[in-house]
Amino acid sequence: MTFTCRMDPKSVRRYVPEQVSLSDDAPGWLGDDTHCVKGPICWKCKGQKLLRSHEICTVCQGQGRVSPKRADVEGARLDGKITRGRKSSTSWEPIGPTPYALTAELQNEWTQMIRTVSRVKIDVSIDMTEQAEAGENLPLWIPKPGEELCNLVGSWRILQRVGSHRWTTDDLCTAYYALQTAIDSGLNRKQEALRYLDLGTGNGSVLQMTYWALCTNSIQISEAVGVEARSEAVALGRRSLSFNIDSRTQNVRIHHGDFRSVELGQLPFDLITGTPPYFRVDFEIASHENSEEVSAIINQGGMPTSKQSAPARCEFRGGIEAYCEAASKFLTPTKGRFVVCENWLNDKRVAEGAKAASLSIIKRLDVIGRTGKDTLFSVYVMAKEDRLVTNSIEIERLEVRGYDGDWTSTYKRRILNSMNIPYL
Image (cartoon, rainbow, N blue to C red; front, top):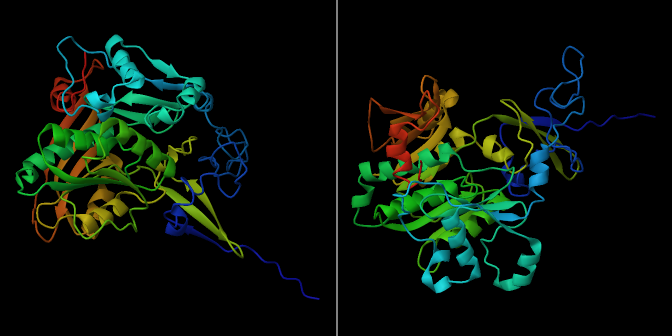
């Protein structure tokens, strides 16, 4: 009698396979144990529970997985919240488009609540009882348990999960530089309104900030599209849009799909933005008779214990190289511009990714978190290589905070003032 030992063939891939990309927001985040509730595979011991020294891993305490932070778990149980208006000097006034939810035709108890929150600077909680009583009359943008309706730019707001992915300085600088790029490259002087695309749009922060900035500066937009693979992020982004814009008159939408294979029609886009995740992840694929198990193994930094934050920080569906390839595919070959943010440690990858995608880097904004520190991240401007030949890159520097920890005057003037964010 012959016995055959059948082992599962395994392979390691750089990104989540496209065929499973939309089946889960973070495929492989839990490894092959879908019933585990303790979080992702430990980034230090790689799930082995022991270190090379045969000592118990100090990060996961020998569990092989990293438990979610208490604040994240408790945050998901909190009532929905509308956050207070930003503190500001008496001279600050919101500019730009009025949120659709606050227009005269939609006056109701919910919009009055927003006005009160902004005026008296207090948070307001929305409990489950209030939501149940409102029933079908509840606006889509009202935060559900574990969510907050937060300030964005001007008087616009955005829905975000407590303890999950939130918009950051990276997003703000990318949106600002996209506006400046549109102006500097003459996209605002085109006879036709420009078409704008945001790759990996997440909760829609960059998409909405850039759209707000273009509209505020009287730049005509025929269409603005965000592409996102994570279903929860798509839902949050669409609900935020319902607060900020009138879908009947403004052609802004978030498409649920993987930008590596998505089809968005025949017309190219004049302006494209992207804020790729910064940290590398490899994926171990174990093939069985009728299925594949995907396990994510972090290679840089630590895997976030929030499932919704993980793909925003780690390269589940592609890093800068994938973003460059997609941008090259969708970008207008004449005056089209791709504005993308990346961790400064990955600068070499940006150059290689751009070259492989036939893009040229023509401008760069180096952002320093605090005076005296090294560059934290950079925002790059790229164009199609076959229409633009350049031997030099225009480089700018921007320090966010000074030695005293306060915003620098340059950051206030260039970023906060341009994006209508108040400061004391």
